Amino acid sequence: MSDQDYSTPKTEIDDRIEKLQRHLLQEGIDGALILQNTDLFYFSGTIQQSHLYIPAQGPPLLMVRKSLQRATAESPLSTILPLNSPKQLIALLRENGLKPPSVMGMELDVLPTNLYFSYKRLFPKVDIRDISIPIRLVRAVKSAYELNLIRQAAAFSDQVAETLPNLLRTGITEIELAGMVEAQARRLGHQGIVRMRLWGAEMFYGHLMAGPAAAVPSFLASPTGGASVSAAVAQGPSFRKIRRHEPILFDYVFAWKGYISDHTRIYSIGRPPQKLVEAHAHMLDLQERIKAMATPGAVAGDLYTAAIKIAARKGVGEHFMGAGVDRIRFIGHGVGLELDEFPFLADGQKTELKEGMVIALEPKLIFPGKGVVGIENTHVVTPTGLEQLTHAEQRIVSV
Image (cartoon, rainbow, N blue to C red; front, side, top):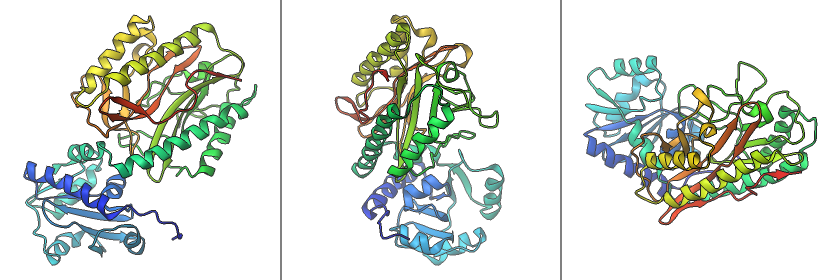
C-alpha cells in the first residue's frame, strides 16, 4: 500500500449504511448481503473479495476471502473477519450477535443465476428478495464528499479535452488519436476502469470517432457506436484515418478515485459543413433549456419528452439520439461510481429528480454517412436546475 490515503471516511460509510437500513426496515427485510464490487465499495470502502452483511438494525459485518489485510486497511468498518468459504456465513453471523435472516436482500439485478442458486442452498429457509432498486436509489443522491470527487473528475475531463486540438492532424487514425488522449488521461490519474451495471454493457475510456465512422450504430445503450477495430468490440475508434472538414466526436469518461465525469465535445480539422455547425448549435440550446427545467421534483420522463419536442421544433427530430430503428430513448443518465446510475432521463421514467443527483445530459444528433454532433456535460441537480461541472469549450473547435 502507498502512503497516500485512498480510504472513504467512516462518517460517509455510516451515513450510506443508515440510509439503506431505512429501506430494509420499510420493506420488512432483515438484512442485505452485498456482493457486487461497486456496491461493496460504496458501503464498505473496499472491493476486496468479500461478503458484506448489513442488518436492518445494528452494525454491518464484512467477511473477506481475499485480501483480508488490504480490506482491513481500506475499510473503516469496525467488524472485518476472514471468510474461508460462503458456507461459514450463517455461523459468522451468529458468532457476531446477528440473527440469521428470514428475509434477505441481494443484488438480483447483477447476481448470476448460478450464484443465486448457491445462496439459496446456503440459506434454504430464507426468502431472498431483490434489494438492487433501494441500493441504486441511495446511491443516486450524492453527498458533499462524493460531489467533490466528481468535481475533480470533471476538472480532469476538461484538461483532457483541451489537449486534443494539439494532437489532431490530417491522416491520423482514430485509434492512434485515442491512444494519445488516453495516455494523457492516465498521466492525470484516470483509474483505467469504467464501471457499468447493465448486463452485457462495457466500455473502455469512451468513444473517439470521426465523420461517417462516428455515426455507425452499435449494441451499446448509447446514441453513438463507432466502426471500432473489431466485431468483437463493436464500438469505439477504428483504423479509419481522420479527414478534413468532418466532425470528430470526443465522448470520454474520466474516472477518478471511483467517481465518474462523462462529457462530449466536437472537433474538426478545418470547418465542418454549415448544416452540421447549425445542428450542433441546436443541441447547445436544447441543453440549456433542459438544464433550466431539471429542478428537484421534475419527472425524468417529462424531461425526455420535452427534449423530443424541442428537437422536432428545430427540424432535427429524425436525427435526435440516433437514426431510424437504432434511436435510443433517453437524453441523460445518472453517473457516480458507475456510468449508468439512477436517474435515467428516459421515455416513461417516473423518477423525480432530487437535489444532489448527478446527471450526464447528452443531446446528440446522428447523421448517417456524415457524422455526429452534439454535447454532453456532467451536472448536479440544484434548487434552480442543473449546475454544469464540465466547462471545456462547447462549440465545435476547428483547428
